[in-house]
Structure formats: C-alpha cells, structure tokens
Image 1 (cartoon, helix red, strand yellow):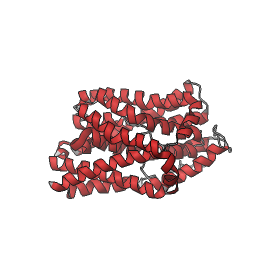
Image 2: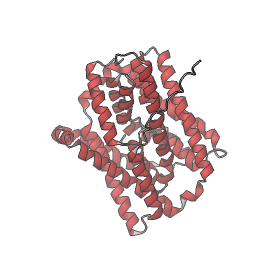
Image 3: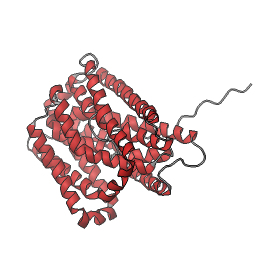
Image 4: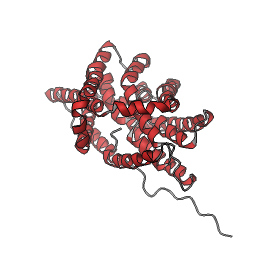
Length: 355
C-alpha cells in the first residue's frame, strides 16, 4: 500500500526584498548613527520625507474610485471594524503580558501596530491569488488607508498616553502638519498633477521607498544614540515573535470565520480575510516617527516583524484557498476585478513593502 504524498512546502517564501533593505538600514544606523549636527539634518530630512509621502498619497488617491466602492458598504465596514476595533482591543488585552512577557517599550510598539491601517497592494495580490473579490480588496485597502490618516492618531491619543507612548497635544499638531495637511494638499492638486503622477508610477515608488528608508535611519539612529536598544534582550524579542504569531492567527481566524457568520460569500470572505488581518508598514513607519520621535526605533520594531510574518503566512494561505476553489475564479467583482488583480499583483512584486 502506497503512502499518501507529503504536503509540499511552497517553493519560494515571500521574503520581502524591501524588508531586507529596511533591515540593512537598521544595521547602518546601529553602526553609523547620525550624531550632533548630522542628527539634526537627518531629523529635518525625515520630517520632509514624511510630508512628501502623504502629499503623494493624497495626489494619487482617486476619489471617484473610492466613492464607487461604497456600494459594498457592509464589506468595507467589516474590514474597518477589524482594523480599527478588533485589532486595538487585542492590543489592549496584551497589556496583561507586561512586564512578564513583554517590556513596556515593546508593548507600546505592539499596541501601535494594532492601530495602523491595513495594506493595499499585498492584500490585493493575495486576494487575486486566492480567487477572491479583488475589486472589494482594492476599495477596502484604500478606505482603510484613508481612514487611518485620521483614526490612527486619534486612537493613539486615546490608548498610547496611558501606555508610555508619549502622545501629547504637540504630537497631534505634528500629525496635522506633517500628515493630514500634505494629504489634503495632494487631494486638492490631484486634478492638475494626478495624470502626471500616474505616468511616473515606478519613479514615485522609488521615492516612496527611499523616503521610508530615510525615516527608518533617522528613527533608529536616535535610538542608538540614546541607548534604547540595551533595554531589549534576545529572549524578549523571541517573546515578541510568539505574541505576534498568536495575534496574526487570531485575526486570520476571526476574519475568515467571522465573515462567514455575517453571511458573506467565499470571494468576499477572502477579501475580508486578507484586508482585515494585515497592517501597513509604509503607513505605520511615518506615523511612528511623528508620534514617538526618538523612541520610534523600538516602536516600529513590532510592526516590521509583523509585516514579514503576515507576508509569509498569507502567501501560503492564499495558495491553499486557490487550491480548494473550483477551476473558475470565484471573483464576485467581475472580469474587471480580475484584470485589476493581475495588474495589482505585478505592482506588489515591484513595490515591495510600500504598503
């Protein structure tokens, strides 16, 4: 009697090339941190880079496409509830792990991770691979990013103040000046510069990624100079990895089985699962630099770890969803959704961790 074949592991795990660049930037900041006048220059450049990032986000967001997606309001409300309600509640519950499992510094970063918006590109790519509702994933990710510009700072003001996050009225003013105003300026100027930005999408992607690397270097340099890295041991980092693995497993289960209880079809459930269980590294890094200042290095570490973990787990999960589906794509968004998915999946491979 022949034994059944063992399950095959994926031939290639999605180790994000841009995440490797981020790790390299952290290593550079550890070896050659910006000090003295150089630190002031790096901080000023990072502030300008954050403002530029959110200006470009505003200029590229199509208001018409976002309004068209409102027709699927139940799905979008479900994703928003997972992102900005369920995630924060789990983050607050993790307060029980302090200080036995997580030190306060890492817990603050974990709680911040639970407040940032969802991803866009990777959610679309995994939804496409799993034969889900790609059109819904596009709109859900866009809504989450748009809402997060306002909701994430407000949530931070509510929950981080009591968790050592250092949030203050000054942080709120910085959020408005560095994030919200540039975003609104981009929206206002979109009618004149939107087409030009679309034509130079790849070049702007490099600007996005380069800006984030600059933000990471400035944040981690300040942390090295102040000696905050001596506060975290290797054992604590392993504990953080375990806590985040549980967090991801809980959210994947909640979005998949919860959406079934809410009566969504399979294609919609797939979109909800990938859009509602993931967090945006690109949105979180600039916000952390504004909210935490010199403490941003440790604050973004949980987000960086969670980002790579979600990519690897969701890639395997998307392949399982696709294998269990029928021969025809189960996309509720129609043919247009499939075409958008193919294009979006290509963008993910190019853009790395942009979202």
